[in-house]
Image: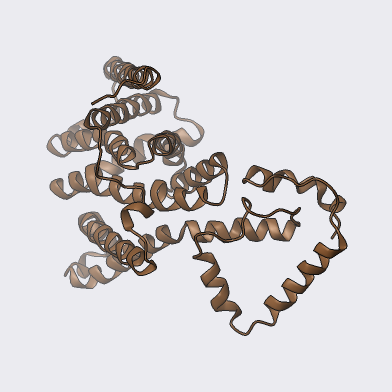
Length: 349
């Protein structure tokens, strides 16, 4: 195919990390492409080869090609890279579903129905799924000859504990501000179901498991999967911006409801930027845990005093605004302090 016909698509590979070459395509390049395609079609182990290529750490990609790409090649690279990047996420989903399905008959709650089982035992099943998933990813990394902590960019050495504390406070402040804003915004469009969705989150049974899951397990496994494996894999093949945006979109969509998608997208962008800047997702884990902290505290209060789950009264609006302003001030203060220290070259240790 000639370059002229696909000129409109030249910006796509450039966005993902390829420099658009100068000059026209030569017949030689077209012939080489045709020979390559023919050879791939005649390969008896085509399926096996494609699978191996997806798992290759340094495949031909947007960052390495030196000739203009056709539409088919652009689509192929994007789909292939996405399949490779979301592999750990799909593994986690299947493991979680398997744990829930297997746990149902073993729980002795079949006579109460599946919904009651999910309400009372879903936390336990998810916690088990998280542990199995992390073990699975660890084994997969070892089998490939790599290191799990490097694949996930989760480093335990040379940790700045003051930065971790700031990350936690920043996350909690952002969560207070966003939650207050969503509570006060008129309940129209995607915001119409916010109160219902928020109340449903707090109607759980296991205090200890809910706290462990929300404050520790969920931030850990989600950051390892999304800002660890997925973002790392895309950064090896794409430019920073598309890798960050796509990772954040997938992360937010996985939260299901439209209102949580908006919430998760904002959170995902913030955590993604911090993880890329620090080169360590541990700081993102603490931000994520900080984001979840207000929900954990509110859930505990609602568990002890269920009557407080009723619709918000007018007299409580001032308290909501106050919490939102306090959270915003805390988040901005941490952000400014962090930036000043970095610009001045001063360690936060």
